[in-house]
Length: 217
Image (cartoon, rainbow, N blue to C red; front, side, top):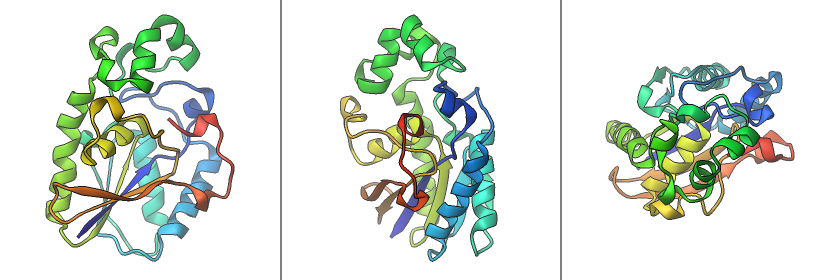
């Protein structure tokens, strides 16, 4: 049985500001995020892991590296571009409030109605395109470690969509049960790299704080 521990990166300046980061935008982790990554490591310390895979985007790579340093076992961190955040095209770097004014239909569809999202309108990446790059690497990891635990550090929008895709959700239902929070843990398990079940969703209790709107996408 493979257990995948999906971690969303630590909270950043742009997360706090309510700004889209995407695959090409990026900002620094907040100072408190480093403490929260240590809290995550404390939560995970009794598990034995094979490896950490992560997005190469700085906010995810720093999260993965800090987590690896804080865990009691020595783990290799491997970057893979397939684990990057959505390419959000023209929306990247923009405040949510400004996106709502310039691209109201696209913003609503991306957040609430993925089946209606037309990525071409913002020169971005579609949900099927995201699945086409993320699903193969996840299945490859599962086949490589059929009886191990693996950490995957990535991004809120990409992880939320991909995890529910692995669970068999339809495109229109991907966002119905909410999003993922910074430094959260979601755990899936599989015995065949084809059928997945969810053991934990968006767990953050180890952070010992009340989440606000800027924590979750």
